[in-house]
Length: 399
Image 1 (cartoon, rainbow, N blue to C red):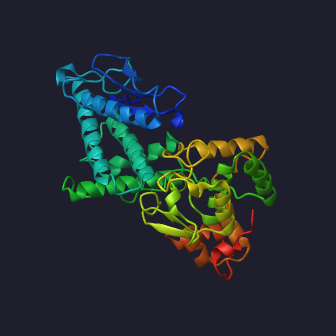
Image 2: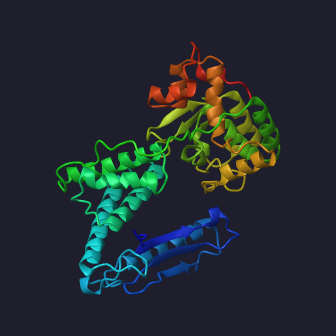
Image 3: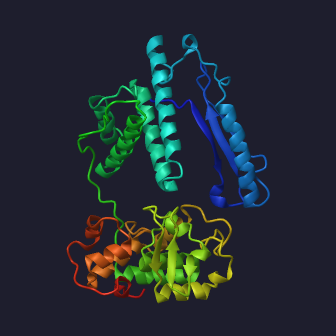
C-alpha cells in the first residue's frame, strides 16, 4: 500500500529552543493537485532580530496570516474531475472515483478530529493535548490510506488500524492502549453529537509488545558522582534534580513551568498550578530543607514572582527554558561520567520513590507524596515492600 501524502502542513515556529543568537523561522508546506512536489516555505522576516518576546509576537502574526491563506478555498480549487492521487507515489494509479472517495474520507476524518481537538482545547494539559493531536493525525492518515469512512467505521473496520500500530509501527502495548483511549473518547464525542449510533472502539485485542519504559533508579554511587559534577558546574540543573528527588515533581511541564511565585519559603511548600499538573488539579507539595537551602543559596527568591524558576540562561526569567533543555544537559553529564544510558533525567524522581520504599515508607504515604491518583500506580514503585511510616518526605536519604 502506498505511503500517505500530507496535503497541508500548517505553519509552526522553529525558535531554536529559545536561542536568540540563532535564525528563527516559520515553516509550512502544501500540495497543489497535479504537482508532484509540495510547495515548502520558510518565513524569517522579523524573527531574526529583537528580543525573544518580540520574535514570538511577530511569529504569531505570521502564523495567523499563513493559516488563513492555507484554509482559503481558493488555494487548491479542487474538483472531482481534476483530482490527482491523494495518496500513492507517482507510479501508482487508482480509479478516479476511488481517489475522490479517498479525498472525501480524509477530509471528513480531518474535519471531525479537528472539531474534537478544538472541543478539548483548554480542558486538558498542553502535553496531553499535543498527544491527542498527533495520534488522531496518524489515525486520519490511516483512514485516508485505507479509504475508511470515519462515520461508518465499525469495530471490524478499525481492528486493522490497531494491528498496523503493532506490525508497521512496532508500538508497545502501552502505546497502543493510549490510542484506544483517545479513539474511544473521540467516538464518544461523535456519539454525543449524534453523528454515530455506537462506539466502534470496543473489545480491541491487546496488540503490541511489552516493554518496561520506567526510568532506571540509580545506585548510590551514581547519584554521588552526578551530584559532584552537576552541583559544581550547573547549579540550576542540580536544583531541578533535587526537586524531582525530594518533591516528586514531574520533570516535564510541572517542573519546567514552575514560577518563582509558586515557591513559598514561609510554609516550605511548592504549588503545582492546575494548568501544569498532570491530573489537572492544583496541588501543594512539601519542600524539604535541602531544596529550600539550595533556592536560598541561588538567590532565586529575589526575582519577580512571575518569572519562571528555570529560565533559559541559568536564572529565573520571563520565558521558560526549552522542553528538552534540562534533559539534554543532564544527559551530557551522564555520558561524560560514562554512566548507563538507562539512567534518565526522570530517574531522580524514580530513585526518590525507591529510596522511600527501602527506608520503610507505607504505600499510602508514598501514594500521597507521589500524587498518584491510583494505588495501583504506587504499587508499581513499591513492589510489595511497604511497611508502616510517618511523614513520607522524612524517609529520603540526603543526596
